[in-house]
Length: 600
Ligand code: GAP
Image (cartoon, rainbow, N blue to C red; front, side):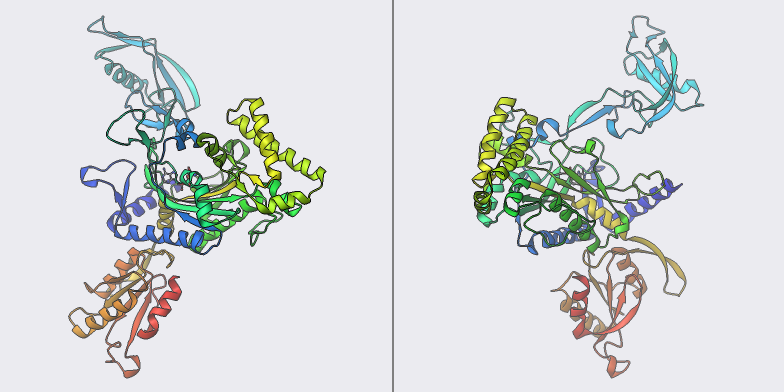
C-alpha cells in the first residue's frame, strides 16, 4: 500500500516536471534515449542555483579550497591508475527469453517452483533438436502451462517451432536471484560489464586512440594536484573542487534521473597530512570525541576529525537549501562494504519516494553523496603510473621532526612504513620491492616529505536536483477566482535555490499605467535575481502557475500602487508569499533589499 502511494506520488512529480519544463526525456521526438535527460527552463535554473551555491560554499567562501575545470576526456592511463579500467564494472545478467539486461546485484530474490527442461525436439522435424537446458520460475499456485509456454518460446528462438519439451522436472526454490522478476525466465550467468563509455581520439579508430568519457570528475583533480597546489600556493591541508559532467553506461538506468548515464558531479578532494605527520608536529592526533560538528579546523586534526568535519559540513549544506535533517540519513558503510583503500565512508541518503523501506516501514533513503576517507591511495597510484612525484614538502614537519626524540621518530617511522608497505603490496608490488620502497618513503617523512591523504565529499547534481524537487512537491487547497476551494500544486523550494525568485504581475494588462509600473518594478529587481513577468490571465491563475514553478514571491502592481486608493499606498505593491499565500504591502523602494535578504 505504502509502495503504491509512493509510486503514485513519483508519477505526479514526474508529470509535473514534464508539464512545467523542469526535466524531460532527451531526444524525445525520436522516442527518447534511455538514461539521458534534458532540463527545461525551470530545471536549468534550479540546477544552476544548486551548482552556484555549492561552488560558493565549497570554495569562494573558504581560504583552503580552490577550483578546477578539467576536460572530460583525459589520458587513458588515468583510468588505469584509478582502477576504473579494470574494476569499474557491474555484474550483469540477461533474460534468456527477452534479452532484457539487469544488474545482477539488483535482482529481487524470488521463491516458487522452478520448471527445468533438458532440451526440446521439433515434433514435425526430428532433425531439429536442442540440448540446451532452460528453466522458468513460477509463483506458487500458477499453472504449469505458463512455464511450458515460456519454454516453447525459448526453443522457438532456437529454430524449434513445434517444440516437444524434454525431461521436465520441478524444484522448490527459495530466494533465488537466477530468474527474471518480470517473467520468471532463467537469466544468464553474471558477467562483468565496464561502465565507462569509450570513444576515439583523432581520425584513426584503434586501440591506441581509445579514450574514455570520464566516469567521475575526481581523477582530474588528482592528476593535476601538483600543478594546482603550486599555482595556488596552497599548503596541505587544502582542497581542490570541481563541478562537471560524468558518464557511466549504467546497465539499468532507473528512478527518473536518479541513475542516469550522463550526469553531473560536484566533488571536493581535500588533501590532509598523514596522521604520523600530524603527530610529529602537534604531539598527538585529535579524534572525534562527541557527536556533531567538530568546529573550526585545528592543526592537530587527523583523518578522522577531517572526515567528521566534512560529513557535518555537507549535512549542514543540505539543510541550508531546504532538505530537513529528517529527510536525510547518515549511513556509515560497514567494514565489508568499504573500498579496499577507504578507511571510512559515509553516504548521505535522501528519503526519495521510491526508496526501499526498512523493517519498521520507514523510507531507508538513496545516496545523494558519499564522503570517503581515501587514504593516500589516489595520489600514490598516479605517482606509480605516471612516474611523477605526487608528494609534498612540509617545512613545518621537517622542523618538528628535528625536535623529536629518537624513540618517537622510530615509532612514527614504523607506522608510516607499515601503511606505505601495505598500500604497495595491496596494489601489486612484490613484497621485497614494497619493503624497500616503503622504507625509503618512511625516511622521507623525516625530511618533511609525504604523499597527502584525502577526504572526498562527492555529490551528484542531478540526484540533488531530484531530491529538491521531491522535497518541494506539495498539494494543498486554495480558493479559485470565485472563492471555491481547489487543489493547488505548490513547489516549496527554498528561496536560495528556487528557479525564479520573484514574479511580477500588473493586476490588469489593459491598463497602461499598471503595465508601465509593473515593468519598472521588474527592471528594478532584475539585476538582483531571476524575475518572471506575467500579464496573461486572471491574477489567481497567474499565482497558481508560479506556485507550480516554485517562485517564492509574487509582486502585484495594483490600483493602490498608482495611488488611486489613497496617497499613503502610492508606490507600494502587494507582496504574496508562495507557501502561506499571505499578502502584505511593501514600498517599491524597499522591495529589492527585502527580497535579496530573503533569497541569499
Ligand atoms: N569520486 C567518487 C565517486 O564518483 P560515486 O559514489 O560513484 O563516487 C558520487 O559517485 C555521486 O555521484 C553519487 O553519490 C551520486 O550522487 C552521483 N552519481 C553516481 N552515479 C550516478 C548516476 N548514474 N546517475 C546520477 N548520479 C550519479
